[in-house]
Length: 258
Figure 1 (tube, helix red, strand yellow):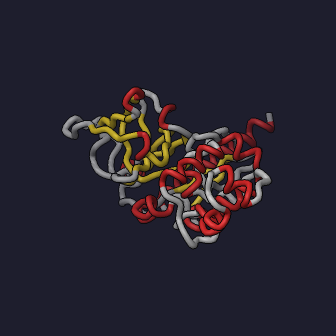
Figure 2 (figure 1 turned 135 degrees about the vertical axis):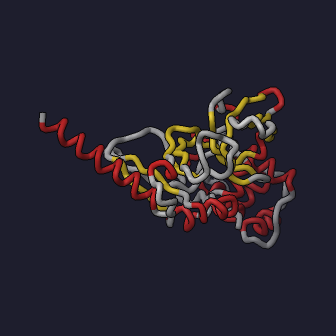
């Protein structure tokens, strides 16, 4: 599912353009634009690129993100950065961590921009404010030992591949490989990210900027096998982080009483 037709209409109205005016800006006829806005036709890639250039937005956002609740001011702030849509709203006093279970991880590539999928993610709320958008992803395989399969990586959202730092670790959502967790080198001149395993038996590989959909920089990890020797359960990570939430709230209360 894409949001292209709805987004075209929404963006046009945000900029107070009639169909005739916007069609003129794109050097096409009004009926052709109307067909794009009503799902009766899809624009060719060259025209889609012109639409993205006109609104100064990335193609990922225009095609794959639901923009109907995004204001004109927010649209102008986005630029061509890749911005996460949708994401649960946080208040001014709490931090929300969304949990991707192993089953959801397998479906994530097809559903990362689906509002219903995001709405149904398990969450925990920590009693302090973070400026970062946080999400927890399960680890698979042995590429990043000593972080073992079954652990969870909690990452903060990064807007653009250009902001990826050398020798840091990231969870990346990619078009070909889905979710991966690796150490990185940013090959900016080639517009590629080199992905390096901490386990040296796995060779490095490169991914083009354009094939990276989401970027989550490592903040914390939870080793469920070490902390839960009876075995991993999908709900365990939620329980563990809820315990952390409770301990932080208790500590905050103790500090307030002093």
